[in-house]
Image (cartoon, rainbow, N blue to C red; front, side, top):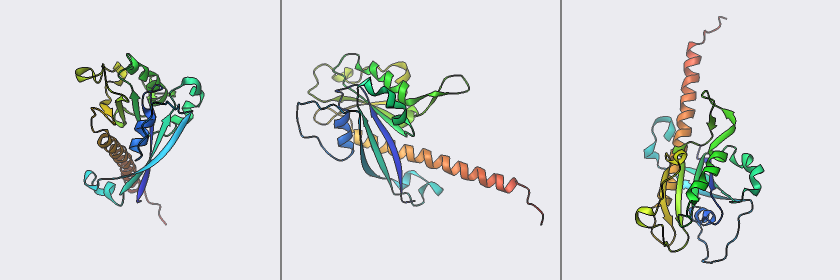
Amino acid sequence: MSDDLVKILVLGPSKSGKSTVTNFLAGTRDTPTKEYHETNPLRVLEVEIALDDTRRSGRQAAGLKKAVVQLWDVGGSSKHQAGWPAIASNADGIIYVFNPEVKGSEKELLLWYKNFALNQDELDDDNNFKMRVTDGHSLIFSHHSSLPEFAVGDNAIPPMPKQLQGIRALETSLDYQSDNFKEAFDALVEQIIASRLAAEENDLLQKEREAKDYPRLKR
Protein backbone atom coordinates (compact mmCIF):
# COMPACT_ATOMS: atom_id res chain seq x y z
CA MET A 1 0.00 0.00 0.00
CA SER A 2 1.49 3.35 -1.03
CA ASP A 3 -0.83 5.64 0.88
CA ASP A 4 -3.61 5.67 3.45
CA LEU A 5 -6.62 7.85 4.24
CA VAL A 6 -6.92 9.70 7.54
CA LYS A 7 -10.04 11.63 8.59
CA ILE A 8 -9.43 14.49 11.02
CA LEU A 9 -12.21 16.74 12.32
CA VAL A 10 -11.59 20.44 13.07
CA LEU A 11 -14.04 21.48 15.77
CA GLY A 12 -14.82 24.42 18.03
CA PRO A 13 -16.98 27.51 18.57
CA SER A 14 -17.82 29.93 15.77
CA LYS A 15 -15.24 32.60 14.95
CA SER A 16 -12.42 30.66 16.60
CA GLY A 17 -10.25 30.35 13.48
CA LYS A 18 -11.07 26.79 12.41
CA SER A 19 -11.19 27.58 8.70
CA THR A 20 -7.93 29.54 8.88
CA VAL A 21 -6.23 26.62 10.62
CA THR A 22 -7.72 24.12 8.15
CA ASN A 23 -6.60 26.14 5.13
CA PHE A 24 -3.07 26.44 6.51
CA LEU A 25 -2.75 22.73 7.29
CA ALA A 26 -4.10 21.91 3.83
CA GLY A 27 -1.37 24.02 2.25
CA THR A 28 -3.25 27.23 1.50
CA ARG A 29 -3.24 30.60 3.20
CA ASP A 30 -6.18 32.92 3.74
CA THR A 31 -6.18 36.31 2.05
CA PRO A 32 -6.11 38.80 4.95
CA THR A 33 -9.62 40.09 5.64
CA LYS A 34 -11.64 41.21 8.64
CA GLU A 35 -14.84 39.88 7.11
CA TYR A 36 -16.17 36.72 8.76
CA HIS A 37 -17.49 33.89 6.60
CA GLU A 38 -19.41 31.21 8.46
CA THR A 39 -18.73 27.57 7.55
CA ASN A 40 -22.19 26.19 6.87
CA PRO A 41 -22.28 23.35 7.73
CA LEU A 42 -18.82 22.00 6.79
CA ARG A 43 -15.94 21.89 4.29
CA VAL A 44 -13.65 18.98 3.48
CA LEU A 45 -10.08 19.66 2.31
CA GLU A 46 -7.46 17.05 1.42
CA VAL A 47 -3.70 17.15 1.83
CA GLU A 48 -0.95 14.57 1.35
CA ILE A 49 1.46 14.08 4.25
CA ALA A 50 4.82 12.36 3.73
CA LEU A 51 5.42 9.68 6.35
CA ASP A 52 8.67 9.02 8.18
CA ASP A 53 9.61 5.36 7.69
CA THR A 54 12.12 5.51 10.53
CA ARG A 55 9.28 5.81 13.05
CA ARG A 56 7.92 2.39 12.08
CA SER A 57 9.47 -1.05 11.99
CA GLY A 58 8.77 -4.50 10.63
CA ARG A 59 5.62 -4.91 8.60
CA GLN A 60 4.47 -1.41 9.52
CA ALA A 61 7.20 0.21 7.44
CA ALA A 62 6.62 -1.79 4.28
CA GLY A 63 5.51 0.38 1.39
CA LEU A 64 3.66 3.12 3.27
CA LYS A 65 5.14 6.44 2.14
CA LYS A 66 2.34 8.97 2.49
CA ALA A 67 -1.09 9.55 3.93
CA VAL A 68 -4.01 11.38 2.36
CA VAL A 69 -5.56 13.47 5.13
CA GLN A 70 -9.13 14.71 4.94
CA LEU A 71 -9.63 17.80 7.10
CA TRP A 72 -13.31 18.18 8.01
CA ASP A 73 -13.84 21.84 8.92
CA VAL A 74 -17.13 21.75 10.87
CA GLY A 75 -19.22 24.90 11.32
CA GLY A 76 -19.43 26.15 14.90
CA SER A 77 -23.20 26.55 15.01
CA SER A 78 -25.19 23.89 16.88
CA LYS A 79 -28.11 24.30 14.45
CA HIS A 80 -26.65 21.43 12.42
CA GLN A 81 -26.29 19.16 15.45
CA ALA A 82 -28.60 16.54 13.96
CA GLY A 83 -25.94 15.83 11.34
CA TRP A 84 -23.03 15.56 13.76
CA PRO A 85 -23.19 11.76 14.25
CA ALA A 86 -22.75 11.27 10.50
CA ILE A 87 -19.78 13.66 10.46
CA ALA A 88 -18.22 11.93 13.47
CA SER A 89 -18.48 8.48 11.88
CA ASN A 90 -15.08 6.89 11.14
CA ALA A 91 -13.13 9.90 12.43
CA ASP A 92 -9.47 9.12 13.15
CA GLY A 93 -8.48 12.34 14.90
CA ILE A 94 -9.77 15.67 16.19
CA ILE A 95 -8.31 19.18 16.34
CA TYR A 96 -10.21 21.43 18.75
CA VAL A 97 -9.85 25.18 18.10
CA PHE A 98 -10.87 28.05 20.38
CA ASN A 99 -10.07 31.75 20.78
CA PRO A 100 -8.34 32.39 24.13
CA GLU A 101 -9.27 36.07 23.90
CA VAL A 102 -12.91 35.07 24.48
CA LYS A 103 -13.25 34.34 28.18
CA GLY A 104 -14.51 30.84 28.90
CA SER A 105 -14.41 29.71 25.28
CA GLU A 106 -12.23 26.73 26.21
CA LYS A 107 -15.18 25.38 28.22
CA GLU A 108 -17.27 25.32 25.04
CA LEU A 109 -14.96 22.60 23.72
CA LEU A 110 -16.73 20.16 26.05
CA LEU A 111 -19.77 20.22 23.77
CA TRP A 112 -17.63 19.12 20.84
CA TYR A 113 -15.75 16.55 22.88
CA LYS A 114 -18.93 14.89 24.10
CA ASN A 115 -20.54 14.83 20.65
CA PHE A 116 -17.52 13.77 18.60
CA ALA A 117 -14.82 12.13 20.73
CA LEU A 118 -17.41 10.05 22.58
CA ASN A 119 -19.77 7.61 20.89
CA GLN A 120 -23.04 8.27 22.69
CA ASP A 121 -24.68 5.29 21.00
CA GLU A 122 -22.41 2.72 22.68
CA LEU A 123 -21.43 2.00 26.29
CA ASP A 124 -18.27 0.33 27.57
CA ASP A 125 -18.02 -2.29 30.32
CA ASP A 126 -18.16 0.46 32.96
CA ASN A 127 -21.39 1.85 31.48
CA ASN A 128 -19.62 4.95 30.13
CA PHE A 129 -19.83 6.21 26.58
CA LYS A 130 -17.24 4.53 24.38
CA MET A 131 -14.36 6.59 23.02
CA ARG A 132 -14.60 7.23 19.29
CA VAL A 133 -11.39 9.30 19.12
CA THR A 134 -8.80 8.98 21.89
CA ASP A 135 -6.99 11.88 23.55
CA GLY A 136 -3.75 10.67 21.96
CA HIS A 137 -5.27 11.23 18.53
CA SER A 138 -6.40 14.77 19.33
CA LEU A 139 -4.94 18.27 19.65
CA ILE A 140 -6.20 21.55 21.11
CA PHE A 141 -5.27 24.83 19.41
CA SER A 142 -5.51 28.02 21.47
CA HIS A 143 -5.64 30.16 18.34
CA HIS A 144 -4.92 33.88 17.93
CA SER A 145 -6.70 35.26 14.87
CA SER A 146 -5.87 38.83 15.86
CA LEU A 147 -3.20 40.56 17.94
CA PRO A 148 -3.37 39.02 21.43
CA GLU A 149 -4.42 41.44 24.14
CA PHE A 150 -5.29 39.28 27.12
CA ALA A 151 -4.20 35.72 26.36
CA VAL A 152 -0.45 36.19 26.52
CA GLY A 153 2.37 34.71 28.55
CA ASP A 154 1.15 32.25 31.16
CA ASN A 155 -2.45 32.93 30.09
CA ALA A 156 -1.91 31.97 26.45
CA ILE A 157 -3.41 28.55 27.10
CA PRO A 158 -6.02 28.65 29.88
CA PRO A 159 -6.67 25.56 32.04
CA MET A 160 -8.72 23.01 30.13
CA PRO A 161 -11.87 21.30 31.47
CA LYS A 162 -11.06 18.07 33.29
CA GLN A 163 -12.21 15.85 30.42
CA LEU A 164 -9.79 17.58 28.02
CA GLN A 165 -6.69 17.69 30.20
CA GLY A 166 -5.24 14.58 28.57
CA ILE A 167 -5.08 16.30 25.17
CA ARG A 168 -1.98 18.20 24.06
CA ALA A 169 -2.71 21.94 23.83
CA LEU A 170 -0.72 24.42 21.73
CA GLU A 171 -0.70 28.18 21.28
CA THR A 172 -1.28 28.82 17.57
CA SER A 173 -1.38 31.75 15.15
CA LEU A 174 -0.40 32.51 11.58
CA ASP A 175 0.83 36.00 12.40
CA TYR A 176 1.70 36.18 16.10
CA GLN A 177 3.27 34.06 18.85
CA SER A 178 2.76 30.41 17.97
CA ASP A 179 3.99 26.90 18.64
CA ASN A 180 4.92 24.81 15.60
CA PHE A 181 1.44 23.40 15.07
CA LYS A 182 2.19 22.11 11.55
CA GLU A 183 4.82 19.85 13.09
CA ALA A 184 2.31 18.77 15.75
CA PHE A 185 -0.25 18.06 13.03
CA ASP A 186 2.21 15.91 11.06
CA ALA A 187 3.09 14.01 14.25
CA LEU A 188 -0.62 13.46 14.92
CA VAL A 189 -1.07 11.91 11.47
CA GLU A 190 1.99 9.71 12.05
CA GLN A 191 0.56 8.56 15.39
CA ILE A 192 -2.81 7.70 13.85
CA ILE A 193 -1.17 5.72 11.05
CA ALA A 194 1.17 3.93 13.46
CA SER A 195 -1.72 2.93 15.72
CA ARG A 196 -3.74 1.70 12.76
CA LEU A 197 -0.87 -0.36 11.35
CA ALA A 198 -0.08 -1.81 14.78
CA ALA A 199 -3.70 -2.91 15.16
CA GLU A 200 -3.65 -4.47 11.68
CA GLU A 201 -0.38 -6.26 12.45
CA ASN A 202 -1.72 -7.58 15.76
CA ASP A 203 -4.84 -8.81 14.00
CA LEU A 204 -2.73 -10.57 11.35
CA LEU A 205 -0.52 -12.20 13.98
CA GLN A 206 -3.58 -13.37 15.87
CA LYS A 207 -4.99 -14.96 12.72
CA GLU A 208 -1.65 -16.65 12.05
CA ARG A 209 -1.59 -18.07 15.58
CA GLU A 210 -5.17 -19.29 15.24
CA ALA A 211 -4.33 -20.93 11.90
CA LYS A 212 -1.42 -22.82 13.47
CA ASP A 213 -3.52 -23.96 16.41
CA TYR A 214 -6.45 -25.05 14.26
CA PRO A 215 -6.31 -28.86 13.80
CA ARG A 216 -5.71 -29.86 10.22
CA LEU A 217 -8.38 -32.04 8.69
CA LYS A 218 -7.21 -35.47 7.65
CA ARG A 219 -7.65 -36.30 4.03
